[in-house]
Image (tube, rainbow, N blue to C red):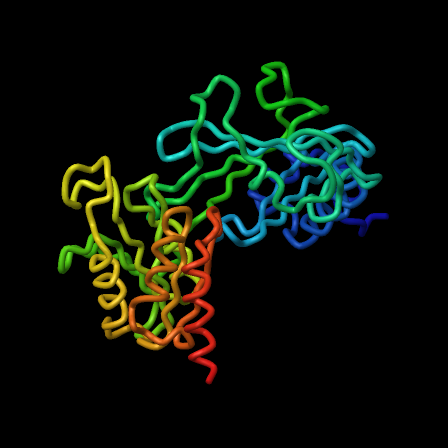
Length: 338
């Protein structure tokens, strides 16, 4: 036993051992091995037995376009327990919008919105994006509002929360277990936004990244007025040049703003402005209309002089086209196929 090292023959505290190392009375290699053995024999076991991970909520990707799906998962939860997943965000005007769903955790203490079914809240069943399409104004907010993005160069910042029990976001007594934020964008990186004030046309042009030329869309809205850009921004994020056109209730249009003061030539000018752009495929232009924009789309499709087969025409049919326009559209389509 006389040749046995001091650190084995006479166990001492870790503090004392470190002091002896500093005084160079114990070989460092032997001490490091001893500390490792002590960690595995005692400390490691104690750490594993006492450690408990905190609840975790993830949303991936954390930054995405508004039409991209997001995977939302909760982990490290008690098995077979009621939980609520909640989404909250503010509009550009500061109004609070929210949605929530009730879930029961699985046997492994997880909840996954891709596979699990909501049993209550803003929607029922398996809905991957239910917390987004289910957004509604929070209780006590202004009434009669629509969720419209006014500044497409900033994202919607959505706060995702995981709460204990089956509750609603308005309940002050609810316990938040975990939270994460995610950004929802209309403009992808590299998309260009250009204000157009040319030949009397009031519009905003969005161009995808790169030199082009790109297929294009003339984007027409309804009598809500103003210059609505978020749909065009998303078109450009998906590879289409898009011109969002104002024709009612805009400060740069002829007065009075309370009525439409532009004629058919105004819409033709906007179409040809888009068609003549050097980064646009002149024979690959589409039209999309909403509400009153559907009427304008039909008139453009039947009267601009551009062959119908050279463009894609899309409709949001909030109002049924007249028989006259349906017949004209059908006649031009048949002429194009001859």
